[in-house]
Length: 108
View 1 (cartoon, rainbow, N blue to C red):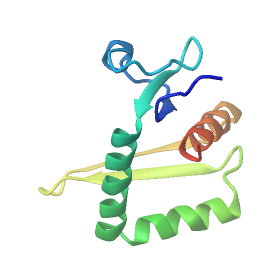
View 2: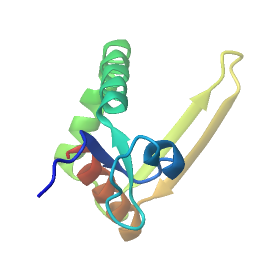
View 3: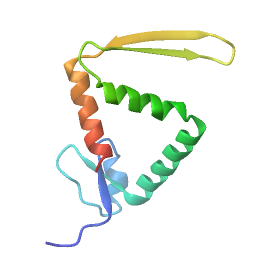
View 4: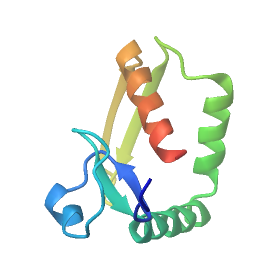
C-alpha cells in the first residue's frame, strides 16, 4: 500500500482546490481537507468554547438526554438593536441521520 498524504475526508470541500494539493479523494461524493485546515478549525473551536463556555455544556446536557425524533429545537436570534427572530423545528428521523453523519465526520 502506498503512503497517503495527511488528509481527512470533508464532504463539501472544493475539489479543484484540494486536488491541486495531490490529496486523494475518498469516493465519489467526498473531498479531502488537509490537516492544516483541520488544525485551524480546531483552534477556532477552542476559542469559541472559551468565549461561550455555557454552549458546550448545553450541548453535552442535550446529548446525554439523547436527541430523539419529535423533540423540539427552539432557536432565537437577537440583533444588537433588539430585533428578535425566532423559530423552532421538530426533529425528524432524517435530521437524526444527518446529525449522525456529521458526528461520524467530526470523530475521524
